Image 1 (cartoon, rainbow, N blue to C red):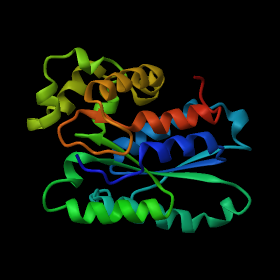
Image 2: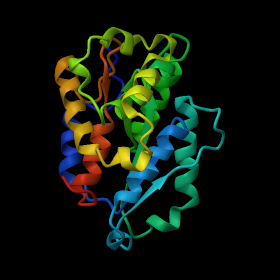
Image 3: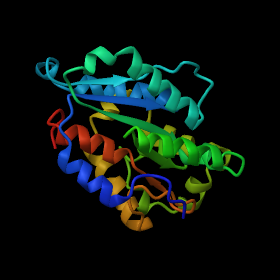
Image 4: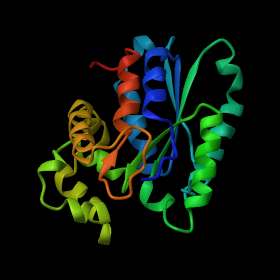
Length: 223
């Protein structure tokens, strides 16, 4: 088990103190960006004067490694520094386990995660990939018989399953199912017995539920 992120106890303390005016989210790819922009559309406009979500643009769509996400977040925060002068923020790095924890990337990923902790960025990961979180908007994966195939993600199995269960639904409609996704993600966490902030290579799990839960706890989305 790879312990590279915040300990679950640290996470609990942060959740109690959480009262952000802005959520700043840097991600690995365009699918994630489009999803969080769909989530943003669900937030009632009456909150615009008090809260907002910044979904960070990619400096290069082909750069998906953790250090690229970290750099994009850093640069974005510098560019809007005045926006936070009298306001608090919560910043997130959303990444996939499968690409960033292969043997030749582990050392660099460890370094980036340490740097993220030092800057109080919250890391949110999915194993094997973000598409798992999208699948959970439709089905309870713990009841499926293809968990090994989902975990290995050979031949893009996760994306194939997503295509099947999504059946052409647009992202805004999908994002409205976030409560179902949170419930199904919790079942996966219980199945894997995975604590927040631990990155097991043998568990099918996604932490995106924590990010969406933070937005809910701020009062921006119905619980």
